[in-house]
Image 1 (cartoon, rainbow, N blue to C red):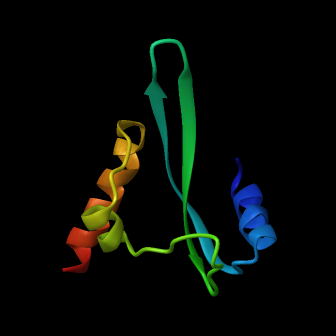
Image 2 (image 1 turned 60 degrees about the horizontal axis):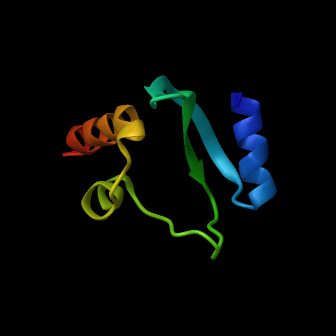
Length: 84
């Protein structure tokens, strides 16, 4: 997904992104499948009730993230550490 596609996806969901920046590429290998992921950090003006919205701190404290997202979890941990 490109940055424009990520913005378009968020816009179609109705969350009005105010920013959307790439935050890195990661790869995760299962026994027979290889994922190539591109992450984006987006700030949005609105939320929609179909989704649960959390801050980086809330994600780290309350959510179990699969190991496939380890790269992005480290970014959240760095952001939370930088904010202190």
